Length: 307
Image (cartoon, rainbow, N blue to C red; front, side, top):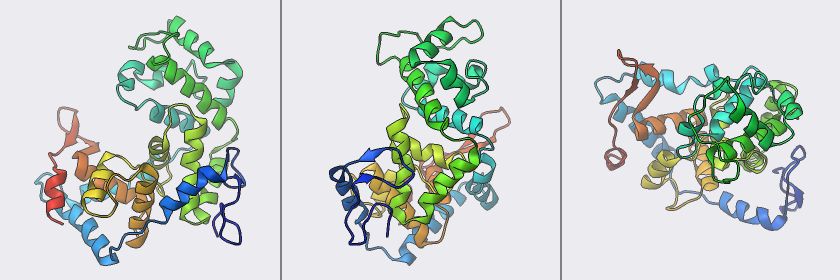
């Protein structure tokens, strides 16, 4: 029985699960469970064939070998955050990935002093509002962000990012260390698949600039390999291969990817990373002799035509 269900199969009203502070109405949650009821007719063998074909497709490129692929699929341990400060930094990186925001915000690490070593408790103690942080960055001689500062423009990237800084700090200041965050994640993983939705939903509700997909991305890129990001590459491949229905939303796409991974007994992170490489052609952990990122020219349509 999931954390959202009663003994009779109905939805509990009031809370998503015991440790969540965000309240949802039954009306809000009913559509979610309608989505979770979707099930494809594909067999284990068909799922495995699609996964294996992704490997074979990449291996056709002369510069790619199995070791390179496997190394990228197993790099999640290296990304695991060791401190709340690292989690805070990672959450801010995810919050500024929208559209052209990275070009306006620049390197977030340059904000380390203004964010007190990325200590969320200290940040919320020192800045009473997002406006306080905005003005501090604008007036600082220590950093030179590339974007314009227009505090009265609600669409300004620095207004949006400043709101992310404070709301993310408020969220993470409730936890004393990474172990407490790990417990939060573990609680969802001990439940049924529907409870895995809880944490990305919580992040999207509490942290400005974090949507469901970026919440998933933050989790999987910071040491939680049970999550996938329902991004454009997963969407194109899953819908094109018939794994997901056309025009599915992010939550259902996430559930389809988790089901795919569970069916073939592979970590969700590996499923995400493999199809992301097929879609993007990128190997971020490898540099060419001139220092640029190693990439290959992949074609999702070509890959899908082989299935």
